[in-house]
Length: 406
Image 1 (cartoon, rainbow, N blue to C red):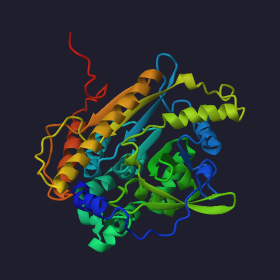
Image 2: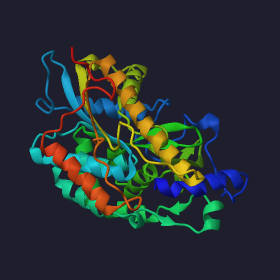
Image 3: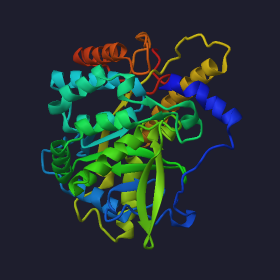
């Protein structure tokens, strides 16, 4: 996918900057950003920076619905929630998928209170949320998929004068194959029990990150929207067309342009949403302590799967615009992902939460013959599986912050 970006991307910028046949859009006006809602479903998402009382109330209910013994309590009598965040990484998502399956097979993988995913992590997240039962489906997806199952190239004129260089219809078909009515029903059941599944997209017009409550959408039974959001989260801008979501405000319908959540962040946790929930509870005059909730007594044991590398990799870039573009894009994405692990770590340190990071070993770099090479992806899956079965040594700090031996 990254290789596919290079030459058309830079040619279109240099030669066709002012070209194109834009479709007629009805974007959300700036003064309505905080008011728009998906029709009839006000509780299904959080646009970060925009309070959503319905979703905040939903989160409070998720915490009050815990039964004794559902989650562990530490020595300070703090309730500890295991939480999983899965990053973007395109074909490298095979490593995280293998790690999850191997973790299941050791019998030590927890039942996560919250699962979040971005890009390829958004594709993995529903499997991870439902647990071992869906490991084999996840394995099949990440070890048999090839480039033709993800994208279809457009013709030169269609690409240069359209909204993308490739069609994402093949990926949409793959998503439709595994997001079935049965899977949606099981996600809805887990949501009702108090667990939460979030997927992130990037809202281009307002440059905001959107966290979608996929369990709430499953409860609504909207399979088409569920599939569309996963597709949007994995739709790299310019490579794939954006995904449009219809929203309403003041009786009018608008369209939002959503793309890969990795445009803003490669991995996310729900701490910003939880902070908003606390603020929302105060705004709604809800006494959380009377409901048996003391935010200071709730801790997270966070597991972050970084579907990528944290150390530099060597690859000679040719002195051509295509090769330089490819190498630059890879470098930007890699270091953005590393920066995200630092950002999350800083928050965990503030709140006293438990930080656990996994990433692809730097000495394991299978050669790919195409963007989504089944053989390379199977090798990544197998390595992730073996790393987990042997007992993955989760990193307690981001790369470069490891404690030094005295």
